[in-house]
Amino acid sequence: MKRLQAALQWLFLRVEDVFNRAFGDRLNPLYHLGAITFFLFWVVAGSGLYLYAFFETGVADAHASVEALTHHQRFAGGILRSLHRYASDAMVVTMLLHLLRHFAFDRFRGFRWFSWLSGVALIWGTYVSGINGFMLPWDRLAQYVITASFEWIDWLPGFGGTLMRNLIHPSSITDRFFSLLAFMHIGIPLVVLLLMFIHVQRVPKARTHPPRAIMLSLTGTLLVLALLRPVLSQGGAADLASAVPRLQLDWFYLPLFPLFDLWPFAAVWALVVAGTLLLALLPWLPPQWRRGRAGEFHLTLHPSTQPLPVRRGETLLEAGLRQGLALPYECRNGGCGVCMCTVLHGTVDHGIYQRSALPDALRAQGRTLMCCATPLSDVDIEVETSEARAPLPLHEARVVRLDRFSDDVIRLMLALPDGQDLPFRAGQYINIVLDDGQRRAFSFANPPQVRGHIELHVRRIPGGRFTGQVFTQMKVGDTLRFEGPLGDFTLREGEAPILFVAGATGFAPIK
Image (cartoon, rainbow, N blue to C red; front, side):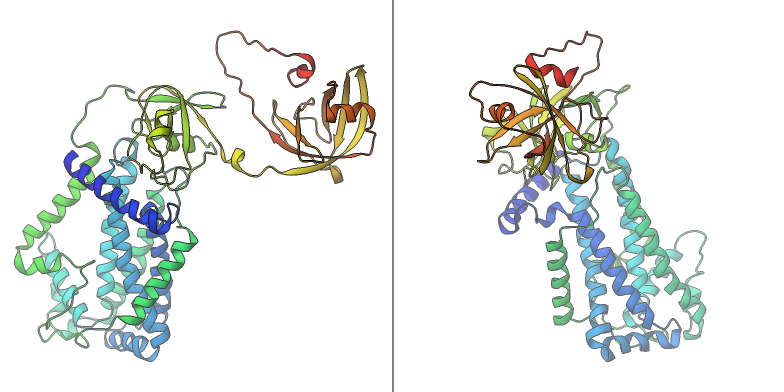
């Protein structure tokens, strides 16, 4: 299995590299397979609702209503029928690629077993819903699909030909039975939708919609395909009194159906059941015996307050997001480099990633990608957070008070306009912006819970531009520009004594 995974990894990395060059790492569709599958489901659901509004569920009217949709509404119902089919086919492709990629990169073990098993259930639900959909147009393809499906299911103990008795004679198919098939095509997709949301419950910050550019380009491609190759009924209306002629199968949903004529039904069932069991048991194959909580480490993010537990096989990014940390990331597949961090202490398995996202020179400097790296010991990392990378907000404040504490220290009180408050955390500071764009940093001297003003303690620096202005020119009512709050402060809990060191006006923020 390791050799198969290694071969698939090599293939995926090469294809992803080509796509990164063509589309950029943020629009690489292979990094958004799960989200694209969600999007395609909504395309299928939306087009299906329109088709259902004009669809007649009676046996005598079903085929005629589908033909009317296809030919009398060529640029509405006809396009939407084709869009419905092609989006369904595309959903199968992205779903299976999503599964194959997670298998290739070994992302289905440990805590991921829940998502993997729910994904296996999703495969069943998608195929059952799709095959059920082929029964509704009630053309010759629908006749073949329903007959072959019922024969296959009737082989199971307990059925004894119950389903096939509905197809012995044309009059055996009633409107009630056909309405049941139509109702199933509403109920089963709802179950699939429920499974999809269950599937992502244990994935921290799971994305259920791809970037807008991918959605637009994918929709446009499907519409062009619907115009160039419209989906049509095959062979006319179903006729149970005659054999089905030669048909064109949809190989995305009906790959097993030719086997019904080549293999015994028992062999086909054995293939399907064995394949399902193999997929379901993969997270535990080959068996690996572990005792207790072996393999669980702790992650400390600088700045942070306490170590965070990392489950076995969990990446640094997944562990942080699960704990609610605001970490930078984009593709989550080692392709963009947005989640790069510095390993301060400990060792990690860097995982599999694109070399363009983490060059060897940066890796030698202790950098790694949080979306791919898994800890091999307790790890301390430093991250450039999204807050640090974002443009700093610029504020204006009015001087409301000037108190001289000594010959070289003044308390400067500032107020934001209209009584606004500036939320901040203990240990943070602001940058006073001077007229020429230079900045001077000052710590908050008031505690965060005291609202309505900002207190700064300004010590006079000989020759200092801003401090000289405060001591000689500034008066109540003057306006200052500043940016912030900036910085962070970490207090690590432990048994050792806590020692604060402050000098000069540095006493203000820790008093």
